[in-house]
Image (tube, rainbow, N blue to C red; front, side, top):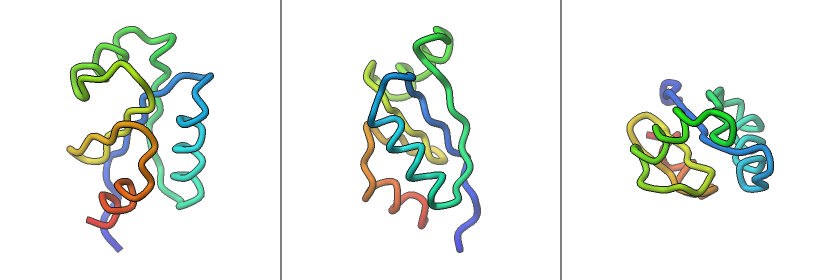
Amino acid sequence: MPEQKNITIYSTPTCPWCHRAEEYLSHKGVSYTKYDVASDKAKAQEMIQKSGQMGVPVIVIGQDVVIGFNQARIDELLAK
């Protein structure tokens, strides 16, 4: 199995796709760091700098950025 990568999810409490992404990673037994960009403006700016996006979720796996809940892309990056 590949080594555990650093995973960050930028999300908001009201985002259903954010919850799906978090549940999916938890179901796979993958640990991650979550930032609520609705209440943490510094993390919101960090997310925009990394992704060029203002929408959530933004998921960073290692050095790769996934915009939205893209299960196939998440699986691909986790398998690297």
